Length: 307
Image (cartoon, rainbow, N blue to C red):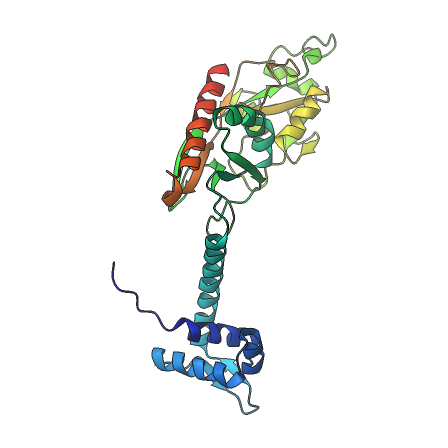
C-alpha cells in the first residue's frame, strides 16, 4: 500500500469548521481556539495544497472558492466517518452482542419466531433486532449483520444467499367451500376480494397482475381491493376471511401449519428477488457473526424442507 499523502488533521478541522460557519470567530468558538488560530490553520492548509480555499471579502468576511466548496463537502463526510469510527472504538467490548437489521415483515414472520432456537443453540449471544426498509450503511449504523431482499449485488460486502421464495394465493379455509363462490381453480378468483401488499420501492415484487398472468388468467381486474403496507397485515386480513392474499413462501410464517390459512391452488410463481445474509467482509468470521450465520442457514434449510 502506498504511503498516504495527507495534510495536517488540525488544519482540516479548522478549515471544515470555518467552511460551515464562514466565520473564523464562530469556528474558533466551536473548536475552543481563537479566530486567529483558525485563520492560521487555514493558511497552513492552503499553503500545503498550494491553492486558495477562501476568498477574503472587503467586509472582512470570507467565502469559499469553488475548490473550497468541493473540498469542504468531502472533508465533512470524512470527519463524520472518523467520528463514527472513533465512537465505535470507544464503546465497551460487546463481542457477544449482535445487532441484526432486516425488513419488518421478515422480522415478524420468520426471524423472531426462531430466536428461541438460536438462544438454545447459542445462549452466550444477545441478539438485538432492528427493522428498516433501507439498505444498511455499516459504516454509519450500529449494525453487525443484515438480512436483505434483492439480487445479492452488495458491493464491498460479504453476501450469502439465504433463501429463495415463491408466491401463491392463500385464504381462510371457509372460503374453499363457499356454496355461492367456491374456490376450485384460479379463474374463481373473479368472485372474491383480492388483498394487496404495497411493495413500494421494490420494482420486481410479484403482485396480483403478475401472478394471474402466470396462471393464464387475463379477464380479472386486479386493480381493486384493500392494500396493506406489510405482508403480515395482508395475511392477517386473509386469515380473518376478508379476501385472498398473495403470500410468499418466505413470509407465510406458521399460518399454513396452524390451519389459519390454506392454499386453494397449487400454482406458485418464483420471485425475482431472494433473501441474503449481508455483513462487512472484515467481520464475517467474527465468532458471534459466524455463529449467527451458521444458525440462520440451518434454519432456512429446515424451513425449505417444510414448504
